[in-house]
Image (cartoon, rainbow, N blue to C red; front, side):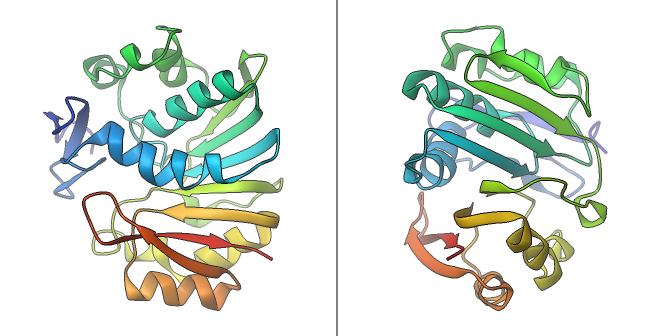
Length: 218
């Protein structure tokens, strides 16, 4: 699948990948970096006050969300255990074509995220443990609890099975009390399924769009 893709420059100068098979980009063309910061870092990671945070990402994709979380963990000296799952990893050539390495003081961090061995825990720093799973998330069973979930799958129109009630029920069971899930989508069916799974759903101001969602488990 990944050979049917291309690198695009977004409005803030950061790159993204367009998957031509699904006709979707991994990030907003209005700004890949800005969107990830708004949706996942500012509305998710920085919303939690704990000094130790377990993060699970649905859709590792380009690795931008993981890199930005790594940067914030270093800056704030928060210990992060980061686990991500991806069914269709991008190849190393595509990863090297992205310009995310300049975002971190550790210029090697971004490519490490892509080149480290799958299905194994790695220690990128004193504050960042990282593991990635190559698997279909609909078939995945959680083996630990998390405080924060980045839900960054392709859109409902492309992958409706990823936004189902069953998926959000599975995530709800895996999230600690007072934990949250954040996503760029604010579709009615997404809100409905999150609420039906047990989450308290809040609409937040979106990035170049009306709303995004943050859902909490009380």
